[in-house]
Image (spheres, one colour):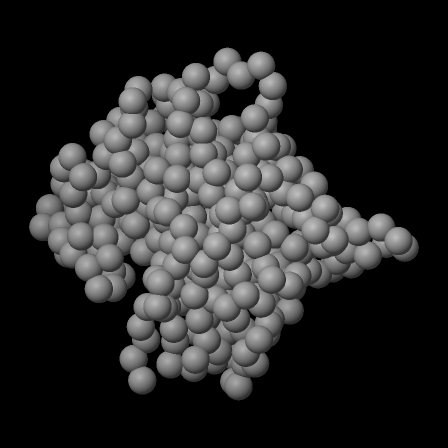
Length: 329
């Protein structure tokens, strides 16, 4: 049996997960919520030097609460952390959350990227992200937009607009692995001045143009960056239907970071807050725990690389953009 993409080629090919986007075109920002039909096991790994997070400490393998209700990716730098509060409020109203006596406390970890210098109107009178978080949760569905949408609305890379990306794969073992990522990298997803993606070797079904690998490569030690802006961070989620512990989710998130390194040059810099959550819905057992976790980790990296390229590939132009879209190449 060959590996193949899921039916949607989205993270929602992992059964039991939905995704909702909310955007503000004037501010050039937004957020994205991954929602589970049921609480799911979660881990996290941070490899960037400038992260912005909420409730990531509780995802360590030695902590008490092992499952979460939702995950939030948001623009807005530190202001965007409020998006998770909006999602948590909406979940509480739905009766979701960790039971403490007669109270329900939704567990909603989140991460943010910096999109405050992208040409949008940032002079808001009140923090808009809590409302965006509620809206994104309400929009949760099996299908959702890529590119200039959700947390990727105002995202940029060194040379092109970034965006929101997703991809999936069904492995010969029957496990599904999906990725969701907001690409706002210091570096570039494309090779030099060409339209070729660094992730080209991992492309499936011409999902980001089918151009193949570049025939030329720039000086590898001095890659283009948007260093002067300090306006960075790629944040993502890797998900699977496998039954995993919190420790195994942490290892899955760690392996998925290889996808950042394969698709973005440079990645994991001191000015990026690069982070990946891992989510396991726990519906399909591991028949061979050692081999299956190895292949899940490798799939996580390749699927994440594909999702990054798809984020940039699907970006669309908007008024006030500071950078062109990939389609302009």
